[in-house]
Length: 170
Image (cartoon, rainbow, N blue to C red; front, side, top):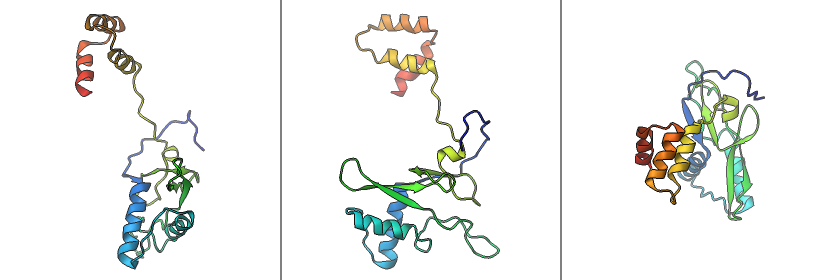
């Protein structure tokens, strides 16, 4: 399980797999190879799509084959779905092969092992600095004059170059 105090190893991510792209490519593959038109409008159709995607012989989501025997390093990736909160359709998720949790994205860190979720790969979210948050909060106040903003920025110890760069970036 994930321990936040444990030192995070340096992991190079080879790629990020998105469930939306995966489902779209699976539907196109099934339409091209077998002539099936799959939709996820009703629960029965969605269950059928899920069973097809969880069957390793139908999935196109595989690693490269081993040069010795031609067998894939990992064979399939399980998916699951939930009802959309809008009440129209369903939302698909990957099932992480390590922790068995739902994930919208999987990260491929080794070509020999199946991709894992962000928690299992121990990928941190980018941390914004307190100074950058403070600066953006100051710049969004429409009732302050430019002189007042400059005084607040000087008092916070933020350089004018940072303010100009923040304004230029949007």
